[in-house]
Amino acid sequence: MKRIRSRSVLIGAAACASVSVFGYLFNSRVELAFASVLYLLLTIFVAWQARLRAAIVTAVWATVCLDFFFTEPKLALRMISLADFWSVVAFASVALLVSHLSSRIRQQAENLKTQEKRQRALYELSSAALSLYWGDGFGEQLASLVRKTLHAEFVHLWTVRDERNYIAGWSHVEPGSIRAAFMAGRDFDLSRNDIYVRLLKSGVRDIGLLWIKAADTDPFMADSVVPIISSALERARALNNEVTAQSEQLSEQLRTSVLDGLAHAFKTPLTTIALSSAGLAELPDMAREQRSGLANIIRKEADRLNEITQQVLKTARLEWNQVLSRREISLSTLLEEVIHSLGSEAQMRIHVTSRNPALVEADPSVLKIAFEQILENALKYGQAGTEIPIEIRSVKTLVSVSIHNTGSYIQPEEQELIFTRFYRSPSMAYRAAGTGLGLSVARHAVEAHSGKILVQSDIEAGTTFRIDLPAIGEEK
Image (cartoon, rainbow, N blue to C red; front, side, top):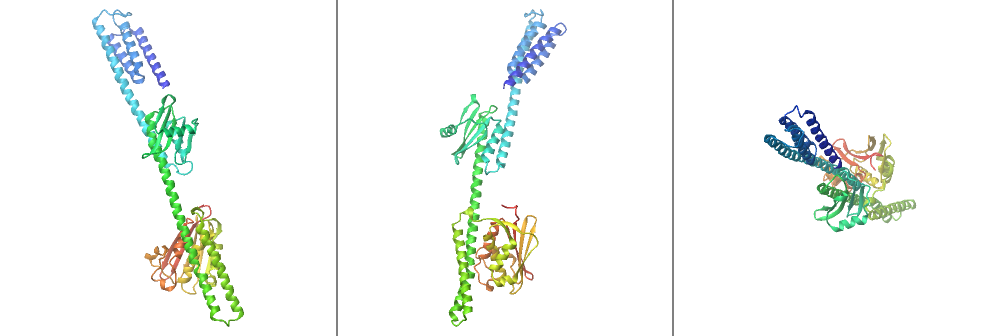
């Protein structure tokens, strides 16, 4: 503002000096009419480039110089010709009128330029606010954007929901003053101190306070920023709530699937215990070694049941963000453990081939459940006695595990349904008992590790399940 005033003063002074010098040098060689035109053009230029006051001063001084230098008697402030008098009066009137109109046009042009600049700044602020990451540091980034947009000395943003202060620049405002301004429940301006205080609202609900100190702004600009900041805060809150809800839902699905898988795992040891107990009861004359072997089997399977029970209880107590306990594991080692736990038939029929180091970051107990379900299905539904090959490959950022069995076929329309809970293919249900939970558990366990499980089936070649998991360093 001071720079504009100084520029106007300089332009007006230079114009008045030019009028005086021209009149002094050319008063004897230039007629009144020509001098009037030149002085009028100079006055219009001053009105366009400087303020109205400078243009009025120039017009008055030009009128005086016209009388002094170009009307008879020259070099005197009096006139002997009525025509000269009316010419000077006409010049003064036209000069003042043109100065006024030119100044208004210039002011309107400046206002339009200012509005365009403001609209562009608000658009950029809105776009930048929408692109901000809504997580940690969102408030500080939002305050910095407002400060940059308004060229402010500082911006102090306070939110009710978490009662946090986000500051950009050096703010001397006390937290008590912020809270008091919010409790006042209204906007206010301290224009003398270049301070603008605005309530942030979402509908009729107050959600925070914006305290701005900026010399180059005004109440209108401060009001325009408020809905953008309010919308950005509410958007961040909504996104955070949505992601939290989705995480809780996915984790609850995982926990349910883990519990389903563990419940599913009860069947094998219970069946073994039942058969061994029946053998002991039905064959009282059994040799001591045989009775001892059956007793050992019962004890071993009872221990396994106890371990599964502990896992069930532990999983049931876990919070949603504690279901997975990840660490670096080798898929080859994990699969060997799974095969060993499935018994002698699995050890004879299942063979693992690993072309590359297959390291992933996963919860071994959860991932083991997924592989157990798929391998149990391969043993049950595959052709008896045939080999079940497992191939492990590292492909770019993924570790891929393929499990193939011959003798089973899943129709295309059922290849997605088999992963839903309790679904059993009508064409395969007669071949083995089951609950329809196994593959649903496997999918949830794999997806909990940011992986995918796919199935391909051919009536002649058999069925292949492929599990893709992020390699180490790709997914944390």
